[in-house]
Amino acid sequence: MRDAWDEFDLEPLAEELRRTRDPVDAERMIWAFERALGVGRVEPRMVEYLLAASVCLLAGAEEESPRDILERFFRRSIPDQIWQERYQPLFA
Image (cartoon, rainbow, N blue to C red; front, side):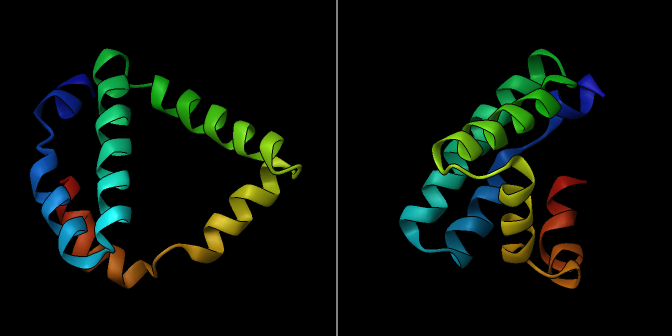
C-alpha cells in the first residue's frame, strides 16, 4: 500500500479539479489532497484516522453528529458514473 501512496501523481487530479471546479474550491481541494497524501505516505492507515478526525471536528463545530456530517457529504457527492469515468482513472 505504501508504494501506491509514494507513486501517486497528484498533478492529473489537480488539473481535472482546476478544469471542472470553481477556482477557489479547486485550490482548496488540491491543498487538502496534498495534506492527505502526505499523511498516507507516512502511514497509509492514518488516512482513515484523518477522515474520522475531520468528520468529528466538523460535527463538533456544527453541533451535529458525525453521521449527520457524513450523510450531508454523501448527498453532495458526485454520482458513481462520473466518479468511474472522470476521477477513478486518476487514482489508478
